[in-house]
Length: 542
Image (cartoon, rainbow, N blue to C red; front, top):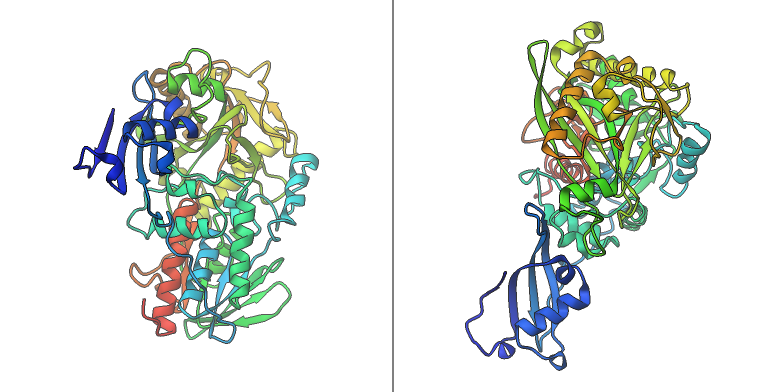
């Protein structure tokens, strides 16, 4: 199918600007030369017209056996097209302006810093981990030597957990901020313009470090500061107002406000707040495992192909959700952070625990597909941890991660079981090849997972096997544990001002505070907190 929008004259070559809505086969839509030839032919143009052709939107429709690509495109003849991205932001010099403090240099913290600069405020960031380049050595040590640096790992360091995870940039949080603006800021810092086109944009873990480095340079060139290897150990609070922070070198830093953007694994921050009687709350979360398949298995299921997906289609993804029952209570089970053509990585933040996460390079060309497969945790599950108050969920997380580590050999080797064996209740005699570099140990995952996770997961896998024929097969294996889908703790804040309800000047932000669930939502939340801090304490018009 091919339709043209806004075309009134049959003499198409005389029109200077064409907007097209197209539905095409992959070999035409996803091959640059074939697509150009198709458009020129359909618009009855000539190559000598030197048309400028670009896609502005692209999505894959694999609902039928014939996969189609939906495309929106623009064609310009004889005129200069406008930039796909808006104008690059010019950040002012804020070196001598009032300063605000940001704890954490992940997407929430970095976008908060850039927005503060736009609003004329000097950001000072504190990151417990290392810069993105130096951080790589600590990641290598986890994979090869099973050594976990508690301050520099897949969760902590410049760019946060997102830098060395999948780099997916889509979100359902349309009401939280300007999605296009965030994407264009990424593009301004060397991300591909393709993220402005794809319905499900993705930068890739191999390219995110460059983007993060350029964002750092923007902050520093504008007069902001970033302190790496600097852990915030205390908040300075006077008369129910936070005036600064204390760091691990005993230095005190003050500012007009503090944005707390520490990510979902900074457990010491929750402990600090709890010890200082600053209100925190428990919140819903989910835990489970990673499920890994050969990517070819997922391609054949999703693209309805007999052999492989061919040279044009990207690695296929999926999204699954179902409802099960356990002891009479309904339980949601769902896929989370699906990584086509990706890898499973060790995401522990302390020795004695095993945590897994997923990531994909930009080309998504690994032979493996993986996804979190997690079960919602209900309030009743936390009853045995009542003594821990709002940190009951943290204790459940710890116990699960420590049990996984102990059972698999007390290293970063992960406990694993073939999916069909898990459903049938038997230990796997052999495991499949895996993308998880520290290695796997065959165990009975029922010895790791509590019943309120294991049994709903078992029932869900059977259901997913019926929904996607071939999903529950002999080449699928479960790898544990996926316990950091989100924080089990929320740091409350006022709805409009984003300020803590009891401590003025404190702005809980992003995933660690319970207000985001990925790179995009964290970035938008960082901008929002920056705007509210500026409005309340710097008189900025937002």
